[in-house]
Each structure stands twice: as C-alpha cells, then as structure tokens.
View 1 (spheres, one colour):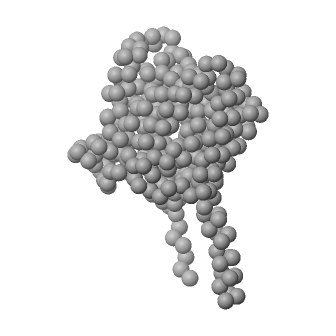
View 2 (cartoon, one colour):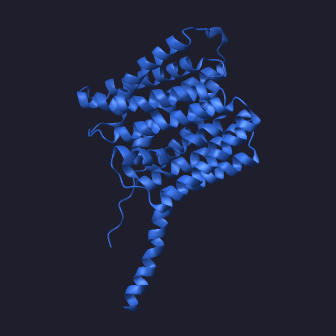
View 3 (tube, helix red, strand yellow):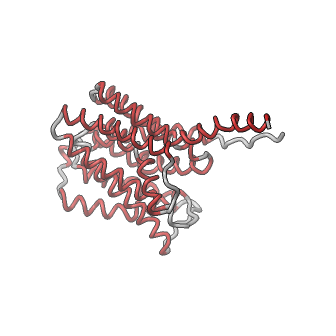
Length: 312
C-alpha cells in the first residue's frame, strides 16, 4: 500500500495562525474603535494591509490581474470586506467581541442557504435543516440574553447580522468567478477596491482627525488587524484551503467563537452568562451538525449495508 502524501510543514502552522487571528479579530475590532471612530479605525486597518500587500506584489513574482474578470472578483470580495467589516465596527460599540464572533460563526449556514439560490446547489438535507434550526435557536437565546442586559444591544445585533449576511453573500458570489489567481493578489485586488469605499464612509460619517484622543491600545489594535487580520489571516486561510479538505477547514468556524468568548472575558472583562453559554452551545452544536452530521450518518450506514450484503 502506498503511503499517503504528507502535508506541507506550514499547513499546521497556518491552521493554528488562522484560528488565533480569527479568534482575536473581534476583540481587536472592539479595542480599535474604543477611541478611534469606527470608520477611521477600519480605514487605517485597510491602508496598512494594502501598503504591505502592495509591497509584496511589487517585490515578488506574483501577478496582479487587472482585467474585467479580476475586477469582478475584487468587487464581489469588496461586498464582504466593506459591508461585513464596516457594520462590524459599528456593532462593536453595542455588543461584546465574543457575541460578534459567535454570530459570525453562522456564516457557513447562511452561505449554504444562499448557494442554493445563486449557485443552484442541492437543497438542505433533513440533518442540515435540523442543524439550521438548532443554530438559530441558539442565536435567539443569545439575542434575548443580550437585550435583557442592555437595551441598546439590539442595534449591534442587527448590524452584525447584516454584516454576516453580506460576508456570506460575498463568499458565494466569489464562487461564480472562474479565475486562477494567487491568494495574495486576490487579497490586494480586493483591498484596492475596498479602501476607497472605506475612505468615503469616513468622509460621510466622521471626516475628523482627533489624533490626540486616540489611545495606544486602539492604535496597537489597528496595526495588529492591518497586518494580521486583513493580510496574513486571509493568506493563511487561502493556503490551508488549498491543502486541507473543506470539512477540516470548517473546524475554524467551530473553534474561533469559543476562543473569542474566552479572550473577551479574560482581556476585556466581558460577561459570560448562563444564557450566553447555552446559546453558544446550541450555535456551535448546530454548526457541527451542519458540517459533519450527514457524513456521520453515511459513515454509520456503511457497516450496516456491508453486514446486509454479507448475509445475502
């Protein structure tokens, strides 16, 4: 029997890096917009990522496509980047980072639902419908708990739900574009389209530069998100997507909400209530069923079918 080909050594490191970056990103968003207006915080983050990504393109052999198909890809990516991030930054003023991460964990379910409509993918199986109901029941528990604690939380919850919808829509639309492109080039191209839109949002919602009021923690969070959250995180994600199967990569969406909630509680004194734990358990359980439920049923059905065949 021939040996299984070994994975590149960077795959485990990249997987761990993506988990850490995605787990810390919600807290980084909260910290970066503490003393900096949300539109300026996200604009600075994008500018940092674009400058570093542009330098990588300039001093490497990576080609940045600038044809019509490429800009279609960049435009679809910008829907998730601009819509998803801008709304998330505004939401960070109303809800804690752990809740944001938990709601963003629902993106695979929403993506699957949108893929049925836009990509003509197969309808949900009974297991996935059950998973959908369980996950959104958990979301309802989380939302009710947050509304009971803080009357303004509904604003943040609506904003982050809209952000997840746009992020999921972007991911599905990207799949409609057939283009061989390097992950770094794809990221830089999307940033080229997105950054001017963030600048426009800053002009519309703020248009001020009170640098003397910006805290060191906010600035450090912006730099961290610019380098890691917007650049290295995306590159690492695309890299593991090329070398691991989709179900393994999907584990990221199951792990990160848990870590994000723990980090929020430890580093930002965010309250973790029993209702939040219950809701988080339902959301993560639903996500697990969505990703692995059908495979588990098929795996259990195989021995039964083999046993029946043996009797015949």
